[in-house]
Length: 333
Image (cartoon, rainbow, N blue to C red):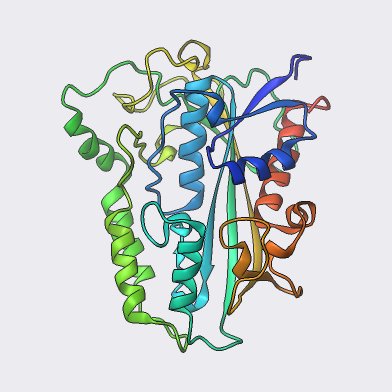
């Protein structure tokens, strides 16, 4: 890595998440910024059925727009009594625009009759690092901490759809979007076996979530499954698609800065625990007040930030990611 400090863009505008990610990344040799520092950076439609797919979408768009290293994460909460929901819908479990309190309230209502011993849950975070101009890097040892992938710049081609209405059909044909979501519905909608859960209401919630999975704010960018841009290595410059996704501004700084082939690192972190019968604690965010890690007598919301980051799913995923980055970029990282 050169002596110049690289910029690290946290691909989120959520102030709670940016603060937590910033605390974890603070001791690295990067100038840490957030999506809010880049006016015009498009919102991203998070319509993947996996947290890795959604985190990759966010990191790819942030890297493409800024021309800088982008780090994104996505988190699921899988509750055994709720057939592993809310899963990828954790942030919008109670619907579009849901607050933290709305999501916790719906979760508690669905589990009101679930007895102790059946309230197990697991937080999972996927963290993704995308460098759109990696230069000469050394991947030796990085695979021990993270998954490594080379990918084509999705926006390398300047050709777009004559009729924007054709975009969904084209990308669906490449990524089997409808088939993937049909399979997801079938798995998550299977009858539950845990006593006490409100299965009828849960089924209705799942249908509503799946029906709105691809909806987003006006102007948000939709990407297909990012794996269609996988490259065989840093010298593989044959772009695999005829068109580029719509929505990246023509004057985006990354248009001139990004290399033809990018480097992606990804990692996962998990935290097992249980859903409490009532919220406790004022720290943290999201489901922290109702999630108590295994072996502890406090919820995540009852912990100091440093204590939470040391054991949390997000902290584990980010530390693995940064460990891999240090191996890739050398001692300076």
